Length: 251
Image (cartoon, rainbow, N blue to C red):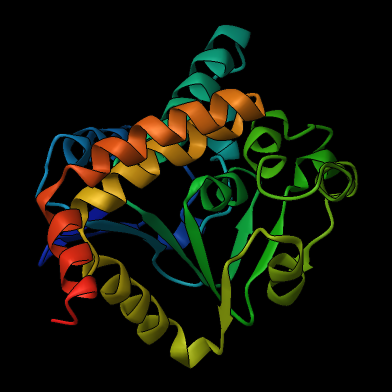
């Protein structure tokens, strides 16, 4: 039986590859379970510095497995499924290290949600993004949560009510994608980004990610108070002491 999720560890970097290439890596129950297991494990592993999520075959991820969903036509089943998918997305945001989506081909519906949930998205120039459930009579409500937190509300709503694809350059202009590269340069671009992240202080990165998302939901004064406390704690780390002293003394 094919392994639906492949994990590779190298020098503090974990690569998780969605491995259902014959189904455009749709998020089956088994794949969601595997993702949750690995994310939970990574969250407890202080040796991990960065995570890359990629897809095998012709595309990144085409969303939920519709055939599997229709085989269980009960509302309670759907509630549980979407709840488990939402937990996976929240686990990505909650990870203490940066998560990069490496996107090629298509990222649609929950696949677009998965990309939008990552901290960074590096896309091949031929990649396309959509939340296309509306074309099947289903508003992509759970993908809308991640999408509307990545791009302007009117642009997100346009995608949600039309189901239209946007290309990688448009996704970059709208803020869904952080970098677009030629298809043949995708592997190297991801490797370069990982290298830039992992050469930085792991303490600073962990403090930063733990601060970044919560402060966005706070009032301005609360956000500054929270960020100030986090930064003060970060200043007490030896890596910050050494880095600042090195800068001051030109070492």
